[in-house]
Length: 123
Image 1: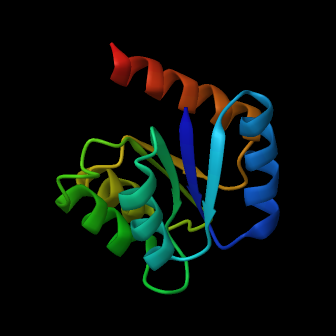
Image 2: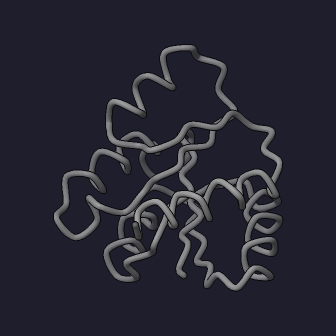
């Protein structure tokens, strides 16, 4: 299974990447919105973990582009964010994200959520 982690927080990426790699996932890390779109189009991951606040365009812009493309529209996107803006959750779910999780994130919980998402999308 392939996972794209899109977040400018290097520590978060390393922790989640290590957790998912040890579980057998092939992990790619993008540090900005433009890389996220490029890596998703090229790599066709099974799931994407996307931060809302990133350089090079916001995660919201990346989510819109991912869901607008025929090549990436079906990839489940799980949004993680440190923002406490109450309307953000409604917005990202309305744009097509399948889950919304506030930071700080327990990587083991996120791992379980990703396994569940991929199992559900394969069914």
